[in-house]
Image (cartoon, rainbow, N blue to C red; front, side):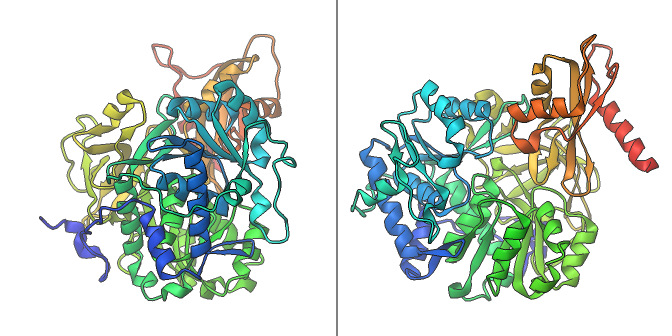
Length: 555
């Protein structure tokens, strides 16, 4: 195999290629349970479950779901925040050979319905706080099996809820009752192949409709090993007995799934589960642990923690081991502060379509500020001419990032058109434009046309535009991302009202919040008499973006 020019920058104990075992994704959890049965696998507000206890609960849940009719290839919606029930549901689903469909608890009813219909989901595992929004969809789509938990059921001192308390519909199941009701802890005897689908991870679509990236067991095994071995310089020094991970990144997101949860299985680490980002609460949780081995985060989160008045008293410099940043670029000032504190960090880039990974800066070795780093082991990366999509560009020239290797998805679930657009001859066309420097480090210069990244979440303006047009008072509208000190970017909408109508900024924002997940809703609305258009009448988003940039230069 020819050596890749970027291999020379790898840390001393990171392999340039990996031999991937032909195992199911959940086998890494079995490895941890067999090696450290009595070590806490999860810590949820102080309530701990050991690897062995978690294994027993997961197998009982798998047995119960199997008896209810869940079989290989079925899609199971996991609609939960970070909590032990998520980990149990994920492992139980995979153990049955079924496919996990990650559902964001903050998704709007229309988003949930679209994903449930697209995947032909027949089983949903959800929780008490979202039931008002879930009930009508379950009824309409006639979802066969619904399992409900209360998030606090796994916190010591809160007691366990009952089906009666949660006012469950007839035929719905209570999560804890299902586990209690079976004593079967045999591993399900399911024929397995590494190419079997394991996870459908929905991501924003260019048409405004989400697309489900289909990831196999082989994809997850490859991503878990690559993420884990990349952290070798600091992680391998920490004895497995002491390893933990601060899991604030949501597990329904591919980044949380791979870099927190699956990383923890392979590393035999305790998952410190945080179901929501609330800064005071998070600082309290960090304060409960003498040392945190690994903290995957996004720049917004790191900024909030480091700038908080309580941060100084927490000795974060000594408390945090390895910090990982992804999902959005990390500002230079922030990187320098982390380095001054003596905290090791790596900044990287990946997509749902590439099982969360792609490139990163070495943990110990040369890092470049503003760079997404160099490709992971076995990930082949090229920069191609944006027009042709095939010819490689010269170093220093901007080109589209295309990737190939064991991380790349099988395609989009039930969506051959979008698959053909993104996957060509095994190469994933990311739509992100980057340039390489003389050392082969990549720098993003532009991105998928107009995508907005706010607080680490990808937001597609077209989806917001479609909602704005649903507002009865709106004649024309367009949205775009404008720079924001805290979130990286925030959503601004430009609106032309119908003749004779009046509306306030709050009215438009509130309308959007009813139809969209909260982080996608505009935070600023500018009313205009007209919007700039091309000769064919297409609204020119780029002109509005240029105007915003000019305003910024003047301030």
